[in-house]
Image 1 (cartoon, rainbow, N blue to C red):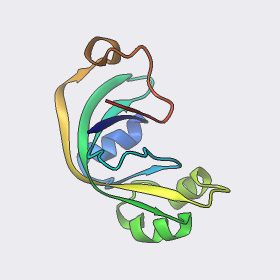
Image 2 (cartoon, one colour; image 1 turned 90 degrees about the vertical axis):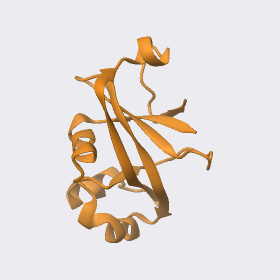
Image 3 (tube, rainbow, N blue to C red; image 1 turned 45 degrees about the vertical axis):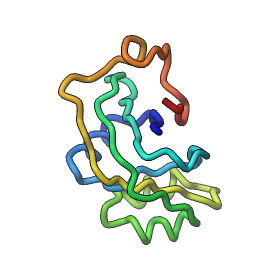
Image 4 (cartoon, one colour; image 1 turned 180 degrees about the vertical axis):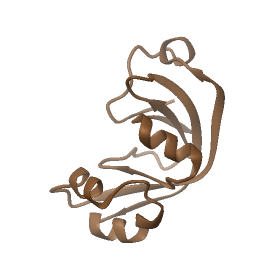
Length: 123
């Protein structure tokens, strides 16, 4: 099973060049059968550029997640702290294997979606 996530261009690039091994989320999909994330790059790109397999999903207090992931987070501590400000839980999706598409895909034409999800959508 797959989900589509909207990710900013800067972080999507780091995922596909291998410098970001974790995708951080404030909330996450409930279905444990999800094994693949399809990456939609938000504005200005607005295309689906590839996908990655999930190795594991971590849930813990933000400080514990940071300690586990900081070496391969692809983000600064300041960004991380601001993102999870006033949150008791943080999620980190560990990236296993990436596949970048040769030709980016469009939401409407390729996925029959007229707009990107706020957090995620099951495919």
